[in-house]
Image 1 (tube, helix red, strand yellow):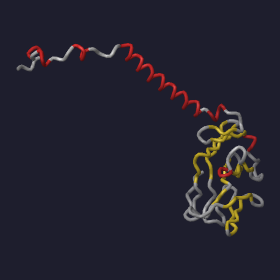
Image 2 (cartoon, one colour; image 1 turned 120 degrees about the vertical axis):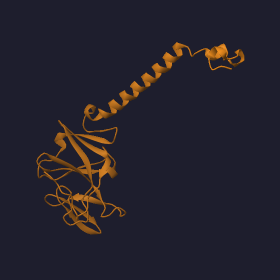
Image 3 (spheres, rainbow, N blue to C red; image 1 turned 90 degrees about the vertical axis):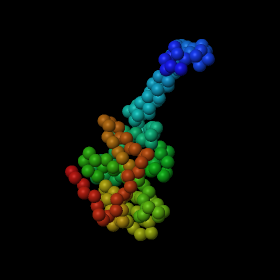
Image 4 (cartoon, one colour; image 1 turned 30 degrees about the horizontal axis):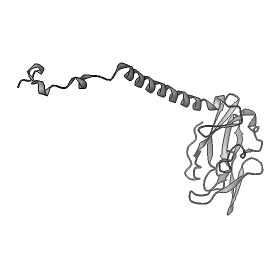
Length: 186
């Protein structure tokens, strides 16, 4: 037998039913449905990403973001403002403070001296700063930095977008230990 198509015996040829392709309208339908599904998914993700800009403060939007009005931020040197139920759960409660002009921090209202230890409630201290009674009394500075504690207060990421403050509750920024402290470049 040769290697050319014409040299093959007819019994080796495929029947006419195997040569019948899928109708073009079915291919068009499949590609169209895949395209519409992809565009729909892009639309849903875009809507979720824009949730913080579309929501009226105060609002909790998908992705664990809390949108607050800029007027909610306490004045420079004023006591921190507690933000909690009914807007967010007790476990996500935090203090909103402005320790320096234009800098806004969201410090968690729960703190533990170590990773495996039970959490204790954080309270605004006398003057500027925070205090925790967790077996012993611990003191923190206005940014949540440890002044008499083994580690800093945990934080949430805060972004200022015009007249809105967006606090990302989906991830906690763990407090760093007293020694060694990271270098802060300003």
